[in-house]
Image (spheres, rainbow, N blue to C red):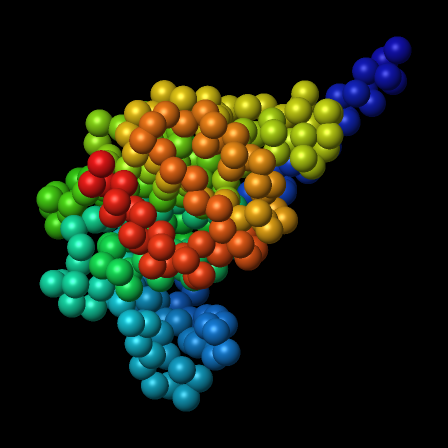
Length: 297
């Protein structure tokens, strides 16, 4: 009997740990690292991080300054869990190109903002400012990567953005992708009086739904919910755009459909093609226009 109980307990721990390892896959950058190489399209670029705010500067392998086509302002701000987080504010090269909408971006479960940059920066080409950041344990951000820290960091990032005087007159749209898409519904529900719209791309509907995808019925039983997008979105009453690819092999399309069904009007579902989180890469104009249309309703 005692051996059977131990086996059940061990199975529980292994299942929970396996799920969390799948759910959060951060790439930490050592706090003292100031140079690294990254791939950009067909080029290898060198990134240098300068000053206390870790401002990135991009160079070719020949040492020539590389222009991204937009501006990055690096910031370091506190999370309510005590960790200092690193974020980037992307904006058009010229101030008069800005369209008056700032996006609060919540990225997916992998890597850090260097890896996630390509999933959102195309929207800057259409006048949006974008604030993206790393959760605790990702990139230069302090602390451990946990689901509890993710939601605390998400709220802290929005609070920081709203405190900035340079966006005081802007409309605020939360745009979450994958893990960040799930998070964005939860944050939007709690802050709907402070924001103007919500965009969710390639997101799962709940922790237990993902647990079932990974581990079957056992995953649904063992995985703690903590917070749920499909529950939160039912209490959100501002414009929402759900984006999901029918070819998504990471998060099933049916989960995007679930979020759309649970959402209140005004809402729209944008069905796209290509791989996970390919929206801004292949549909930047369409998504940009739909965000603007949402805010006109």
